[in-house]
Image (tube, rainbow, N blue to C red):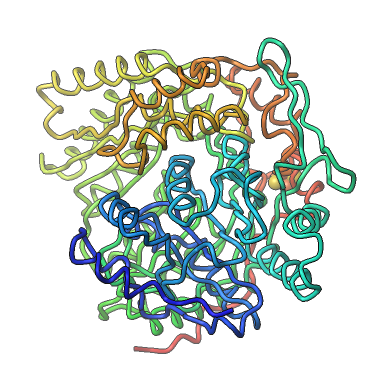
Length: 636
Ligand code: SF4
């Protein structure tokens, strides 16, 4: 059955809203496939505004892969701003895709990519505007399967009641497998309706269907057990791991936004996973093992992507890009190729060492030497041992001295506040470090024209990390420490003016903490916040801490119990039935090692220390020289 475009109705509303261009679609490399010729139709959502959502790599990759599949189409939808939401409600215009402007409810799957938990209320807005019941249990055969992915999906329990399904890990292969299950089911005449489709997905072992699991609780509120309530459903659902990135060279044709977006560049992921073992880093833990993309594929992707998009900046993405085993050759090859052109290269890497500066020097051949970023994360040597960020003060000073003496004038340092075992002195250590950085810079350059910015984020303990058992610091403690740090920097007559400080107060981290380690009961708070007008919680101008507190009280949820409470080893955690491959005993041991300041090496270069991922997932670390060359690249 054909589906009409909503554009004529939407167009009438656009003159009345801010940035209407974000809703019109038609970007270079966007795709609108024939509706009737497709059997399986996906609406892919990034639950934030277009300017944040469009550059998202995960959505762009799936969009392209699914649209390449015969008989399958994929379109994109983003969170609409409150001004358009109000008009859509009054005029009865439902949530639409920006490609074909088709109603989201008409699709088979609404796949939502959650990079953070702060998009949960935006998901509810989209469901409601689409006319899809908020609760999965209320949906009918006419509604799409609402499917979550992305890093937050490694604990989807707080939104379990709103989801039909969730997938963990890399999306490329599982998106195709899900399409195949849906295609077969539809071609058979949709036997057993929605329930049977979900059962087929759950039985495949690669899709988590929350309704097929019951959660029971102890009288004190802790979880007693999470167990399947049907036969054929696995006790634990495993994450997906793409083992050969060269087989999946996406995006090939990056989307070029029409409106301004947060990143306007072509990004190529140069490897996936990280085994450095930073204990706070959920991304590093859940994306193991390391899998490098070969230097030749990266070169081909850069060349084809630049040609297809016209972007004049290329970003080489990964969790720690300077760690690619062939990054030196890659940097030189690309810098040679694009020297003298208007294409610049960037390497979002925060490793603290001189090699990183060599790379930055290569990449800045074509542009300005603005700023270099390093991430010591902890303000004191002790703190860095706790979080397993193996950077000494000497390393940092040596690195910044090299940077300043090679012409860089601005250094940015990332830290966290509220880390496990942290004391006031650890945070004040950030001021000491920043002073030493400026002192080193002045000595290296013989000039006072050097600057350092410290950027401080609130630490949130995340599922599937060694800190999943830790007590989160309350926001009063975080705010007090940040104020003391600010005062220390302000009061420093010699160095203070050369040091900038950027930070957020501790309140948003508490809400993020509630959503990160929450269980199914937290869904009531999310719904209450949304009903009270909560939208765009990742945006400070829209976020209301008081609203979250009030709604938690109303829902009978004790936020402290979920955030500032340390968990015992044997407590059943809400995500224990979701398998990121990490051995629970190893995670616990790593948590004990953290408390005792014991560090763990990177298993890329030292023997395996049995975190569990490789044997559980049937995977292995893939690094090392390929013996290939980046060339031939077209000489410009
Ligand atoms: S199983 Fe061993 S080699 Fe694989 S990621 Fe874990 S520690 Fe590294």
